[in-house]
Length: 447
View 1 (cartoon, rainbow, N blue to C red):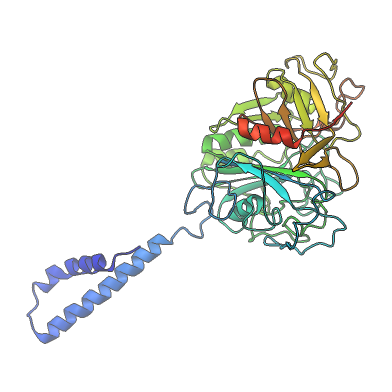
View 2 (view 1 turned 180 degrees about the horizontal axis):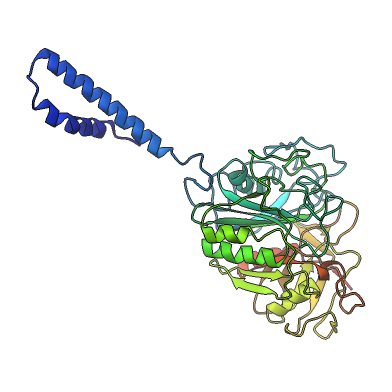
């Protein structure tokens, strides 16, 4: 804040030389006082203008952008698992939804926005309050608020925008193979620092700023025409540096994520020129057949599967992590890939990849004694999250991904379903969150 006494001192000093040449009469004393007051006012106005000069500038802000677990509560990362509407309906007893990012409360037959979460400040899984993504005090809503009503640069991608915005080359509002099966948002400031938020919800988010809202649909969970809150979903947000952002943008291009750098509704580019150059390359179907694997500044591992690498997605993750066995919970439905052990032949493979370990398909999980479904299907007790954990005694990993365990192990069509699509996986090496996710998806398995 401005110190008024300091400003008066500056004004007095600035007039001192002129005053030395004035005769000391009542009139000149009044003139000096008036000049002193006018100069002080001018200095105060200048200081105020300097303090607020960047408030409306894209990329500018009061601090480094970070994931938030509530208003003004930054963390390095958080994980949210939105529970399904069969076992955890609505937003909890007596809690009503709202639409802070656009839209109207939808008359869904079934919906559920109760959630559990963990974060870098408290890594233990716990129940959250309110409607996930529809408040400014839950992790999803608070983090999205930074972007939607802020001034950060952003890229939003989603293979299911449902024509708002429209994406060239996609039909019926969805973008199939060889586009990536990936959904999320990344936001950053003038220095390239920011955060990424992985989501699994169709049609959300689909606009990054209140200045460029959706034209035909809502942009808040629970306020979108598509009932993307009926089944379970997951969300993961991570703080990133400029170097991390560069790696992420390369990984997104490699995975052929669906976006449009020319559409301000889903892309506002800026910051370092190198970042802007990478953003301009997004929204294209990649010809890559090479998996990328980077370790970010946080220690989180970033894996990118290209669409043209026609292999089972979670066998790929196991291979990249050294053949560790995994347990996965995804939208598991036709064409489903069965559970495998380390000896199961995988003919749909690439010679550049190491041998994968076992991949167990979770059919049920549990929270606080309530068992819920973890496979895909039409109904309420199903799952659209894409999460997994390692099951080896050492190397405890939590994995948050874009891709379902659908496709083929051995053909005849190795490009079937998710085999022929791209996606991103974040691998977190933290014992507490590992134990929490492991417990969440513990239960029955599919053959």
